[in-house]
Length: 274
Image 1 (cartoon, rainbow, N blue to C red):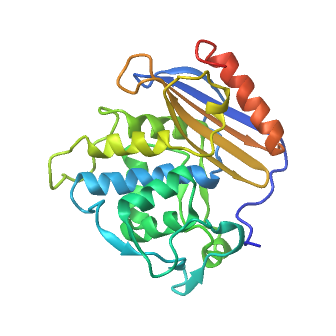
Image 2 (tube, rainbow, N blue to C red; image 1 turned 30 degrees about the vertical axis):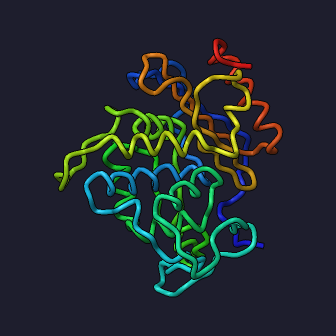
């Protein structure tokens, strides 16, 4: 059993945002409403890590020592347990590359990998990445499973509009906002290519489950009791046909949430829906 992560929602809500390749809004409903983000914050962590790699502050091929223990907001160590754990994660003390942590954080939503990467780059770097995209409803204030941070009211929130904008920035060569600081090296294409690769390897799809076979996609879902979300790019990220859809739900059972998300896919993306 793990510590609670968010108060249960007191009403049913559903928000969405659909962007085209240029970032223009094709459809939205309550898109700036903030929700408890669940694992969708892993996109913002990935953005921070890839920006650090882009400027040479982090080497994705560096090897670190795997751990399930991290430093909480109060300065003491906490250890992830219960349903926070990924049974496939390397055992404590084993070696793992930063690149593999990034892959695990996204494709199987590993909380251990997420906290490890946040400790590597820092919460301030995640906040800077969020600010660089001018995301108004997104805040990543704590590590996953940090009871001391929860006790202070720290939370992780985002909106459907912010998620769609984050996904577009991650997968488009020209979608990355410039850093507020000058990079130490020239930007490369590797972070964008890596983002596309790990998002395409997603093992827990929701939007993609309603897409026709053969459609190019990548996604990141997130869920805790009472909340179920997903954001996906649909179509070749280098083409004008790219679209990005984010859907956030509260107050629905997982099956009901998935049905509503699938219905939105069929409504908003009929040309690529199953």
